[in-house]
Image (cartoon, rainbow, N blue to C red; front, side, top):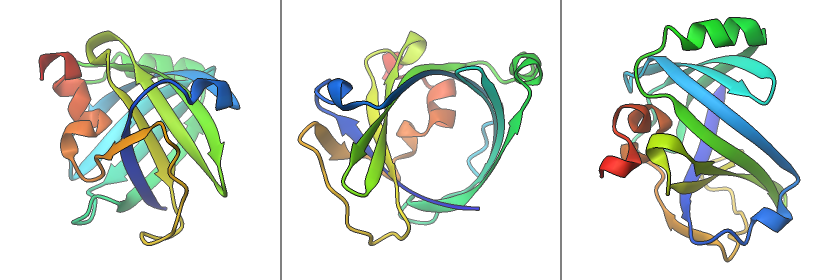
Length: 155
């Protein structure tokens, strides 16, 4: 139930040809409070309910619990969410022993492209592809819950 993750901006779209999967993700927040976010997500044709706790001081580690829910339930629950739905295309790109998840945002967050990598420990080594830009781990402006209320286009 612990997620260890680092986030980066993406410099260009050179990663697209390396992707092994591509899915549209639509998600909303029943609660976007940083202390405990509750998210509804539709990824492809599958629904998810996710609860995340507040991150540690570096923003790298936090509690995360997720379960699959029926698509019809996820669609209904999205209607109960706070304003500001996140809409993005996610690409999965293998890199060494890891997989980067790269999100190209659309709608209110169009223009933002971010990569995430999940690790087994905060100090685990990982490859950094040439298309990877500045690290934004721990910068709450780049949390999806923040983006749902403060879209990238308004920055």
